[in-house]
Length: 226
Image (cartoon, rainbow, N blue to C red):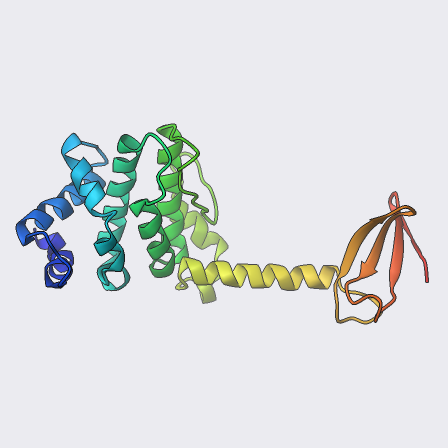
């Protein structure tokens, strides 16, 4: 009960709540039990569907509550979903909580949670049509800790970033690297694109015709057309 009190308070204080405090205590605690034991029981089914309601999606707990509770609840939802859903479903509380975790957990911790969820769905052979997509930073195998492996790849200056912010930085760095590798040698301000023409493949500035740099690609050699 003490572990779920914070979440219970959010539920019962909402004017849209139609369920008593004791009932939500049971639903919350069932998901916590499921997430802690990693075992499904049929009585958890009702609790799973409660967390898929519109009320849950509008509740501030998921954005402001204890993230450690969110991780346990998330695991409980994943386990329930693999045992309950047998076909596509447009409303998945797993997807909702997963989106919140990307915004609240550090990149390394989310990496561990996401890899666990992906492996659990794979082992359960869940129908791909509704299986959520998780993208860990690194994938590990055996006894190696996924979050430790992620920390080994994340610089100290980025260690405290949330997963979502870290992914944005990674994309920005990749875009900058891609630009430097494909920068037009003539104008230096735009990228080169590869186009297929009847004369073969050519590299052409993305600012063409304002920049008229082109280069023909023939096998491993390139011939300047200018």
